[in-house]
Image 1 (cartoon, rainbow, N blue to C red):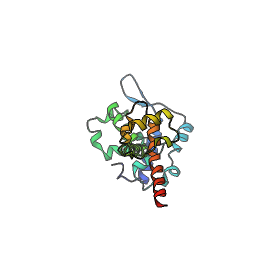
Image 2 (image 1 turned 60 degrees about the vertical axis):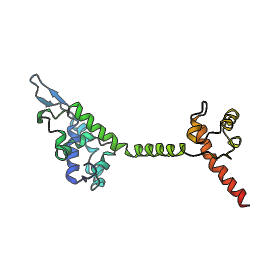
Image 3 (image 1 turned 180 degrees about the vertical axis):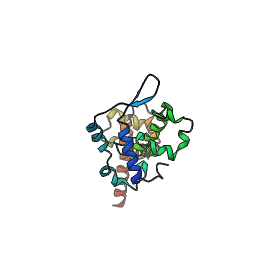
Image 4 (image 1 turned 135 degrees about the vertical axis):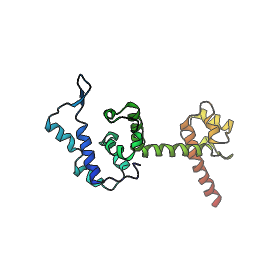
Length: 202
């Protein structure tokens, strides 16, 4: 939904209004009617200007999800659009209960915001996990020389040479063998393989 909906001038205006309204904290009187608390006009203008046309006009045409990645934009600024785009989220709520949002809906929206804002980081983490899984499955050649791995302690070199683990995953399960040591072995498998190829080509 946020990926498909493009930012328009009308949405920019809606975000500006939402940003300004966010500065007016609701105050409740003795009969439960919400009334806005006054804020100084200059303060409101300064805060609202953060979301001015000059700030968001370059994003017009981009998906709302891309806009949400900006640090100054939060999911709360998009609630007016979400009321139209995803009314099912708010269908169980009477109009008079929609500000402030119930914690259950707010938490759901914040979860969406987190996924979008940190999408790149999460994808990179997932790729790193997949690379690690592939690396763990890598076989350690029988000819591999642990003594030539710079950075491994002599004790660890001797332990690995004695046990001769079949794969990097097997090596990582050996007591005392650190993840850093396994990474070194992974790198040196490539180094030693290239050296063997060079010697064989002579």
